[in-house]
Structure formats: C-alpha cells, structure tokens
Length: 402
Figure: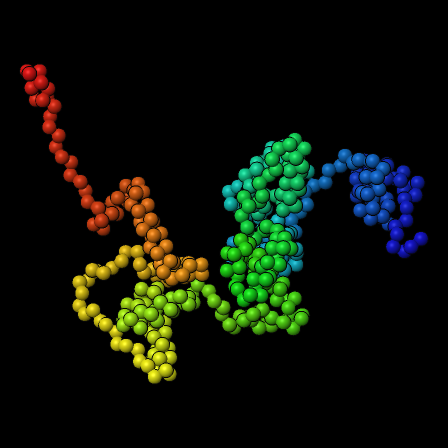
C-alpha cells in the first residue's frame, strides 16, 4: 500500500463509529480512534449515512479580548486595513475582519441576528439575513449590522440563490447594488485591463475612473504587478524598480495642449498675458512661463512678440462673463477633463452651457425658509409688502342697491 494512502476502516472501527458518532459526533469517535483524523471520521460517517444529533457551538473569535480591543482601536481610530490588523496579531485577514465587525455590531447600536443555544441562526435571524441580501447590501455591511461572519453571508447567499432558482424567481442583486467597491471580485480580463493601463503610465485615480474598479482594488493590482515586474528586472513607466514614481504622467493638473495653443494665439494677437491666462483657464504663473518660452522661440527666429494692447481704465465688472472662466482649482481641473475629448472652443462652449443650465435649475428650485432668509440677509432677495385689500362689504352693498 502506498505511504500516502489512508488505511481503510476495519469492522471494529466502523462498529465504534456507529456506536459513538450519533450521540457524541466526531469528537467522541476521535477519543476512541485517536489515530484517525477528524476529517476522515466525518467523511466515513457521511458515506455510511450515519448522522449525529450533537450540535457544536459557535466558533470563538480569532482574537483574544485584549487583542480585540486594540484591533478595534486601530480600525476605528487609526483606519488600519483588516490585512494590516491580521498581520499585526498573526491571524488571517478574514479572521480579523470577522472578529472586529462582529464586536462592533452591538457597539454601533445594531441588533445581532438571533441565534439558538448552539450559536446557529434561528428562523428569525435567517429571515433578517435574507432581507439584507435582498436589499443588495455589501457583505461587510451585513456583517456589521447582523454580527455574522463573511463565510455565513456567502453561504446564505448561495443557499438563497439556489432556492430562488428552483422556484423560478429572480436571483439576488449583486452585493452593493452592483457598485464596484473594494470587496467585489475582479475577473482575469478586468485585471489584465487594469495592468495594461498601468503599463501606459496612468495612475490609480485615472485607472479607477476608466475601468470602474475601486481604487483599493487598483492599488492591490498595482502592488502585485510591481512584484512581478521586479522579478523580471522591469518596472512601471515613470517609476523605479520598487514602484516609486519619479516622472509624473499627464493628468488633469497639467495644462492641455489646446490651452497652450489658445494662449499663444492670444499673445500673438496682442492680448495681455494676465487676461489671456484667465480666458484660457491657465494660472498666471504658468501663463507667464509659457509667454517667456514663446518669446525665446520667436527670438531664435529673429522675431519679437508684439506689445500687448492694454485697454486702460474700464468700469469695474463691465466685461465680466458669469459662466467663464472656471473659478478655482477644482473647476479648472474639471474643465481640463473636457479637453481630453473636445477641442478648446467646443469644450468652452459646453462649459458655459452647463453652467448656465445649473444656474437656471438653481433659480427654479424651491427654496427653504432658511435659504430665503439667507438670500434676504445677503441682499439677493427682498421682502414683498402686502397690498391692503379693499373690504368686501361696501362692494356688496353697492351691488345690492344696483
């Protein structure tokens, strides 16, 4: 007999299995057959059709009380990930997640799912789990609200879907309502797509926006990709062998080429540099730098940049466009995202239309009483006086006399 094969159960061992397993379960049989593993005893009892009436209790937490309190503090205050917490206390990431979320269930004010004396879900508790699954909640949210493990959530999802399929009903919605959060599994095709975007030199935020995959998942894919490339002696574009970026690729903070072209055209048409920078949604310092580069380029050709035409004194606010240029860094970066798809003039026209539509929608929106008071306080609205109404009795009297 090969060394790796387990010897068959003898008739005497089977007799003890039939005697002790129905009442005491695997533990009782293992006391009489210590050379047999728990797994082999369970498999043999299943093959023989022997069932046990014993019910095991709920599995204890993987973290002792003193470690559990520290893990909760690290999660709630320091915002540590479950992987980092598990690494600190020497347990698996899933075990750390289960221990922390189950302990936080009552502390957050939630009611745990009902269980019997053996720690198993009662019909009421099972119904609450199924209701949460029907609502499309994320797995971690169900764990926190009901105080159950991730394995329990996954098992109940499988059973409920199987039950719905047998009855010809629609299956459960995906976790999180289809939202691409960090706990959603990623297919090989999606992983390859993310890696291809990394090899183009893009960062996590742009890849997450293009692929629809969460930033956390994109970061994990990047870490694995860096290790794989490091073994080959390669690295990501713009990064060193350890994945540290040294060359920043194009992003929304960089000035788009169409903006530079529009600025150069205005400068050649003798528009002052500060005014041209505002009209092109470029910062003043960047516009001056680009002007100096244009001056040097023209000097190399033996030409000069024409002097700007300054309008002189004008009435303050006479030439202010309420919808252009974008105001603040956030609006400027949002406008530059349009330049990835549209030319400068078309992007500017769309920006102005969108801002005009937003202002119109805001004006038509019914205001609350507090908002109306704020508008009156800032002088944007006035209190209307109530016109006195003529009393009706003289009018009625005149009508009766007529």
